[in-house]
Structure formats: C-alpha cells, structure tokens
Length: 438
Ligand code: KE4
Image (cartoon, rainbow, N blue to C red; front, side):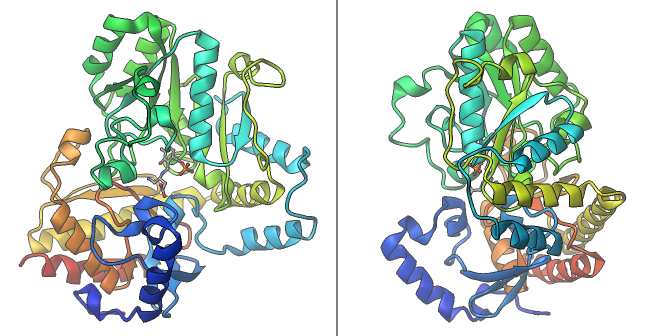
C-alpha cells in the first residue's frame, strides 16, 4: 500500500525509457491519444501484464486498474475462463477467412441478452460498428443527415468527428483536420438531455434526417446518465419523422446492465452498435437491430460492408467466455454491490476533505466530476475543474490506483474488483482527497 501523494515518487525508469523510444516510432508514443496523459501531466506508463483487478507496469509497480482496457475487461485481466478458452482456440489457428461456429454462438448469446437485436454483423472495432450502422441507416431511409450529441463519442469515422467527446474533448481539439467540410455537412449536433434541441432539428429538416445516434448513457464526457424521458423522447421524435434511432452501446453494452441500456431503460432502438465487452479484450465490434433493416447488408442486400478479420475465431472465443461469465447467476448483483461500495467510499473521502464532486454510477460504469453539478450535458461537464482532476489522477496513481487519465472518460469495475480491492482504493482516495485541500 503506497502512502504517497505525488506521482514522482513512483519509480518508472524503464517506462520512461520505453516512452522516449516509442515517441520515435509512434505519434505521441501511443496508439490511441487518450492513453497519452496529455490532460493530466506526466508520461504514459508502459504495462507488463494484467492480473485480475491489477495492472503491473514494466518497473514492477502495481495499480488497481479502473480503465479495464476502456471497458472490455468486465471479468478483469487474464480471467482464467477467458485465457483457457483462448489457449484451446489458438491451437486451431488464428483466422480462417471463412465462417466458423463461434460467430453464430456469439451472435445468438448477444441476442439472447439483448433481444431487441434481431440480426447482427460482427466487425473489428466500435468505430467500424458505428460507421457501418450509419451507412445502413442512410441506405434504409434514403436520407443523408444524421443527428449526434455534443460530447458523445462514436469512434473516429469522419462523419462522426463533430463536437465529439473522449479524446477529442480531452485534447480540446476543435474537431479533426482532414475531415472535409462536405463530409460533416450532414452531421447535425444537438445537446444531450435536451429534447427541444432535437425537436428544433426535426422541425427544420426532419424529412432529411436518416438517424439519431446517441450514447444511451454518455461515457465520453465523463459519465452522464439520460434524464427521465430523454431516450423515450428520442424514440418518439424519430418514429414520428420516419428516422431511425441508433443506440451506440459500444460502451454500455453488458456494462450498464446485462442487456445493455436498451434493456435497462426498455427502449427499442432500430439499430445498435456494440463493441468492447463482446470481444473480452480482443478486437471486436458489431452492429445489429431490426431484421428488415439488417437484410439490406451485403450479401443479402446492396449495402456493402466487409472485413478481413470480422468474426475472428479468437475474438469470438474471448467474447463468448466473457459474456457467459458476466451473465452467470448472481454475478451482476455482486457487481452492483461493489459499485455501490466504491461510490460510497469515494463520496465519503471527498466529503471528509470538503472537496465538491458530482459522481454517478450506472451498473459497472462510474464517473466523478470536480464540480458541484448537476452535470447533464457537455456544457455542464466542461465546467469541471480539470486541473484538480489532473492532481487527483496523479495522486491516485502515486497511491497505486489507475483511473482514466481524463476528466471526460468513465471508470469501469470488473468481477475482480472484490471488497478488498475496493477498500484499498478508498484508502488511497482518503489520502488523495485530503491532499487536494491545499
Ligand atoms: P473503438 O473504435 O475505440 O473500438 O470504439 C469507438 C467507440 C464507439 N462508441 C463509443 C460509445 C465509445 O466509447 C467508443 C470508444 N471509447 C473510447 C473510450 N472513451 C476508446 C478508448 C480510446 O479511444 O483509446
């Protein structure tokens, strides 16, 4: 147990030298910008292995991990059920370029838990899933405009890099260069939790809107839940206008509820994007929904989408083991209890130090803003004290707890975060919040 309050006391010489070497060959030394610590200071730490709730870095330092690979690892790192299944599968090869039974089994298992999805297609990332589902919505409706929400992040496809959350928000990028204006001319943005902002768009160009895509629980501006009536309102507005409702459940699928947000809130989207947990840490995405829409997808229909490694047997295997693990009897109930224990501990630590925070938890996802709140959309999320968040992040790291290195991300627990791990986290938080008083 570390009783440190600053990052610098954590010896990471190997990580530092690896980072210098990485910067020679990888932009920013990373393969995804949110990993770069740009918003919190210091250099990213290179990891040697994951074990349950922990990451161990290349210098042997151990951290309680609340990133969990940005959501996928709901059973924790190197869960024996997942590793055993992969050990067995890999002896039969890594990819067939042809259908395999595991693709059917994983599709059936997902639809068993998310029955509003009648048919789906596997791809290799959440970005591919949202990119494909938007093409499908445009193909099905014959319309071109889409509505997204400020602070929602749907991956890095050109048409969706407009007022996006996650790394775009973290790095304060206006939006990305390299995206032609024509490409985003049909991307309209509304305000999360503000139905009137959506109604105004439908009043103006409703007949041209192919779809509304939404994070049914927003996890890319920090964690921001839907206000009562918001999702039902989107369902009504889209149905009335002949537009499709798309739930981007890449993050919320099997994270906010074993049946995703669509089950938790009992709203039926026309289409859903999935990722993260369904691959158990291997590269997987999926999109699916109403059968009559999905049957537009090639080779049945004319809408083209393809992928060399889509349905990869190893990724399917990891996804099957992970979903079976998280949907086993009693597992979800214990995840909820542990999430509650963590939130209660963090809230007590902040209150004892007199530090105002706004926190939220839905299922196994949680968020913590350094602001009085309430936080209901991007404009209220960005009121958060990001400098204080950076100090919190660095001090938690120095005390052996690895939170997401950005105020505009969510945290994730796993079945490996048992009471002892939660209590270890809370003890660190008590030290850290006390240190934030200065
Ligand atoms: P990927 O292409 O990163 O697999 O998924 C894109 C995506 C789509 N939709 C939602 C709701 C998402 O949260 C994501 C990706 N999430 C980020 C974390 N906020 C991935 C982390 C990263 O970019 O490195």
